Image (cartoon, rainbow, N blue to C red):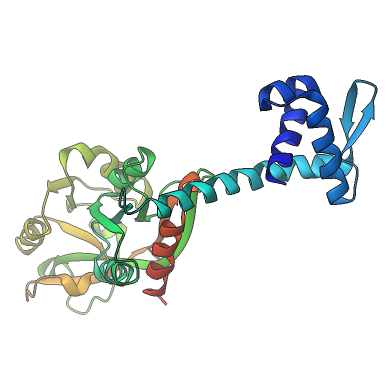
Length: 296
């Protein structure tokens, strides 16, 4: 049936049995017979024949629209099966990445469990900013990434929700009221926002913090969180983190972490697992399933 579906798609695309037969390297009578056998197997007519031409029946239109997806999935299945079968010759490598400022607990636990379940699969792990991970997926340097959602969902990618986490501000206690339990973005306008980014990522991160989160002040740039926390301690600026990672803040009696609000709304970020739709293989999906369990 696999070949019959291929022949049917070729006939419809070429709008001609002879051209389809040439494309599929079989004779015209043979491809006509294969289409008839496909119709007999389905128990319905797909083509309304009119001399040397034809039109699609209602069932034929439905079958054509959906058979292409089925064919693509079968081709992916064949490719993945061949990869698994050839592992002894060429080990399969799964490239996975996670957002640098998200925290490592769940991701590394997933790596550990995946490695135990699939000991023959090599894992290549990386971390980075949102933009670094996005570009790595786009360039096929990553198979799957744990990242925050900053772009509108695209059919090019599979987007699987993992968790929502509130934003918090790490700031020196001297700069807030003693009994303060939350902080407004507008109250930070005169204080620089500290970003932990590389020079190549600075412009994208500044855009996100300015235009999406609403940062109104200047930016200070550093490439390590240790340096960022030192800058907070010295009242040089504030640092935005997610509330999952506040337990990683170095013990320091001079700083405090407060939930970030914009008016009456608590500011939050959604985190997803992303991978390309055309790279949705067995091991990518297995890694996601294990990663998802870490958040349940």
